[in-house]
Image (cartoon, rainbow, N blue to C red):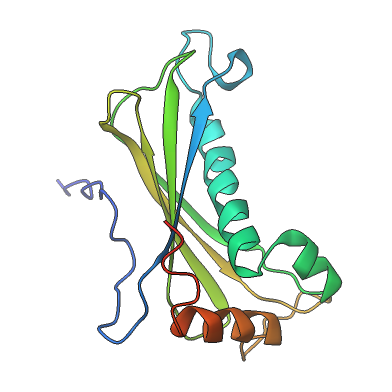
Length: 163
């Protein structure tokens, strides 16, 4: 019988020793009625939305917002989404969403997420991978100028890890 893979609690992407610190955002979210299943527990399908909230905040903070993408006619679809669940979140609970963009040299964005319950324990962790493509959907082999600008600013410490 094969053993099930262990769930991870973050650190999905390796961080190179010479890489700048991850860009980190923290957001609060009150779990609403529309977020929960009939048992009053945060529905598993909502985790992607919570991850997206952190993703959008990272983008706004470092020049990779959706309006920046639109202006540059650039697309970065999510090609991987993974969630590990550890503890239930319930209706009315105020959770903390943590997003961490991890440095990567190629035309992609690796973002890790953690969802903390109001009591402070980890409810879920996961990640997304976004690949940059041109308007026809063809993958970009080199980082687009918008990402290069972000990376230059990130490398100089301009964002200070965002925190």
